[in-house]
Length: 92
Image 1 (cartoon, rainbow, N blue to C red):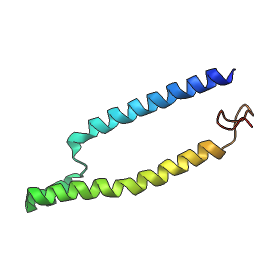
Image 2: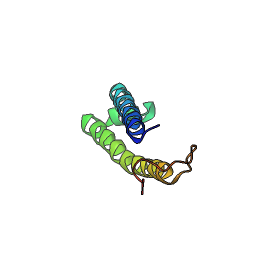
Image 3: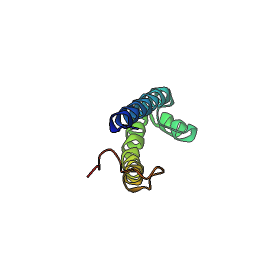
Image 4: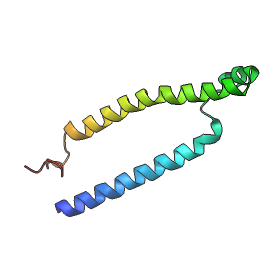
């Protein structure tokens, strides 16, 4: 397999992953980033508290996604190759 075909296949896989992520993210918007107990507690305190709770949940999601995303990138970068080839970004 040529390097060009491998890069193209990687780009297609990345596009599919981004499209799936976007669909899952847009599908989760109606959930408002809360469990039922959090929603009930915030609704009892008013709309300002509900908005603050949504914002807090999304802010706390950022470090978790950063850690998992970083671990995933490192696993792809330094992980073993099945075919023994070097990755496309490290052809030296």
